[in-house]
Length: 637
Ligand code: BES
Ligand code: ZN
Image 1: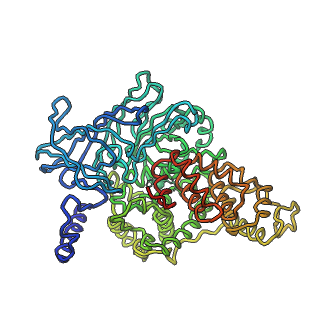
Image 2 (image 1 turned 45 degrees about the vertical axis):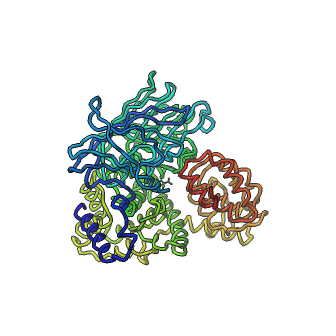
Image 3 (image 1 turned 90 degrees about the vertical axis):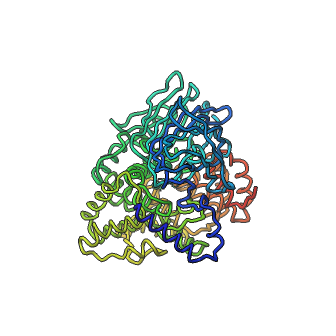
């Protein structure tokens, strides 16, 4: 991998020489030739361990203290870190109590995506750099919630979101996924709150509000995570459990009861779990994702608590990241599909163990429908090359790579490969891959080499992986999933839209099962499919009939709400607007609220609602969501 990077760099340098007329390249100062969305000079010096010593202050919404970087220095006189939205107070060299101040400087203009380079003067012998700093309101990883936005409504909450490049907004750090570090931390928090991290965690509050943490296994720094709130712990098995606010404990324990079985299924597939403990942390509704795979402690959105365990595949997904992503990490954000595509494939294998093949196929098919739509949008958009698995995100926000291409095209690539080589060979190959690359970062070329060596050439299999990885679109040979129950739902949707009464109670004939359509007869995924196959504009009468019979507007399953609300907006079904408003006032999950705001904004009849509601609710969202919506609604500051 290192060698490969060296060669790539050489190629870049050579091509820079060949194009001497290209002033941009020739005049770029060394510091600014950004690779991998980072300013850090990791080739010369890199962190091996970091220690955080921070005070968490809810009054002024600030973290303040010091980060101590233990570094491997190959003899350089400068160390460069990534920072964004941080105030640096002082930088010292050497171990605690024997520290000496050193020179430092924030270099270059602040880039809206990458932030700034923090340059620090060191000596060739320097092994420890200590940066004293405080966060600001521009520290985008941090979501400080007033108590009104929590379940208890009585205690405030703080959490961080590091992936992809937001760790630099709460810790001055070399913010690249290709470097691995261990970390430890000492935190001081208000006495009535508990702190947890992606590390060894307390199970109870302590009266001093002082907590210590340790992450012994090396991780990429986007996985450093912190949350502070009124938390309790519920154990699900000897090494799994749930952290949440006290009000949510009972429902969480019910919803996620399958976690120990998921762990067994995962270990059976790809080898033992490397991180000792696996807990969930249920965050407030503002959390911008369904889940985030912070090691030992997956951060989860409370919208997953549907009451019927229908959305737990997200947990299977985050657990799967304990192998794909956390153990074997994408080397750059261009290789993001190695994290997410593998994880979606793995997630589906876990779900197959938990709910059986048919259910798992239906989950995958819902995702495939989404991929088809997204691929069309991408190919017609300004960056059709985003339809490739291997991306080119130079000069772009790595978040742009977070599409169904990395997730679902990635997963279907592996499903197609599995169908071609057979499950046994596929399983051995993947288990070998995780073992071979554990605790390292991998790029797409590394994967291709390993694929050729350990699977394709080894068994003399002809498989066109190139069109999957380096071309846009969904290849012809893509694995097809057939689902009779989905066909049935599609058929129901069509018949309804053609005016047929699908809610009549009589069964018309035993062969042609046109049974009545009752909500309890079908799974959430089947209902999602039913809604998806309705035309995008329905009459008021049709929407009302659906609502009377199936109660979609009142259904508190977030996936159903989302799909139904999208239809309600395009159909201008005003009876659903209060429910949409209430959903947007509470939920901050970007996957739902960004498309909802875009949908509202795109119709004349609802444009004003988009603007008014966003104005009213934007402070309830994490910056990850509010920034995306801000851009989508063309709001200029
Ligand atoms: N790691 C991702 C979330 C992420 C990706 C955050 C890129 C920031 C940048 C997480 O594992 C994820 O994929 N979450 C999905 C779950 C789903 C695909 C099952 C989500 O939140 O919707
Ligand atoms: Zn993921």
